[in-house]
Amino acid sequence: MRIDAALRQARSRLEGSPSAALDAQLLLCHVLGQTRTWLFTWPERELNADQLARFQSLLARRENGEPVAHLTGEREFFGRPFRVTADTLIPRPDTETLIDLALGLPLAEDARVVDLGTGSGAIGITLALEQPGWQVTLVDLSEAALQVAQTNAHELGATVICQPGSWLAPCEGRFDLIVSNPPYIEDNDRHLQEGDVRFEPRSALVAGQQGLADLATIIQQASDKLVDGGWLLLEHGFEQGEAVRALLADAGFGQVRTETDLGGNDRVTLGQNPM
Image (cartoon, rainbow, N blue to C red; front, side, top):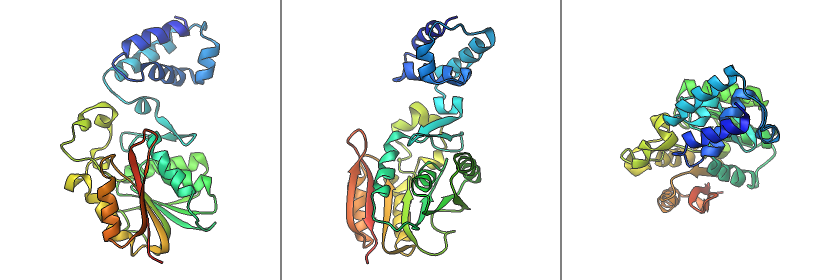
């Protein structure tokens, strides 16, 4: 079967996905070890029997809802490929908002930075690669997730420290910047039964107190772990901006504001530890 015919058939099979064409292209790229540009350049190339069988197998799993990132084993974030597994969240474009904000802060060239609940390591590793002078620590309670982060750091050439533990509890000293994309979804949220999140670790998604429990814990711990004038950046749900700003203000943070993601939704709230 030709590449263009295989992709047309795949799009039809995946019509229930909002990104059927892209899903099909990424899966076929994975099978062939090629780029999407290569697919578009050589649509008349024939797939051999083994390639077609592997592609059909992946399509069947995608039809059952498995995330493309789990099927290919990676997801691009900030222009780099990150390995992902069922033990980690799948990095999402909206989280790049947090990266942009962090890189825009007036921090020293040797700033100490910690990424809490790092998962695949996408946030912390990206910051370490974008600012090689920063001293970046990755923290996660899940040793399986931390192993994925260590693998990503090694493969991408990032110098980081990996620390197992819960939020800031295992961290010594003070930091110039604390970043986190913690669990923030209510346990009865209908979106937990939809899309890719059905296959992601629930412990990395769900938090009590209407999704605010872990955000509140990090904010409570952060004051004692930030240098004077240090910054805390938190990703959260699109309806939680006001609540997170209130938590930061109550904890004594200044310069509190919320920034929107690519879709214009509240996504990251930041605050500065008093000088």
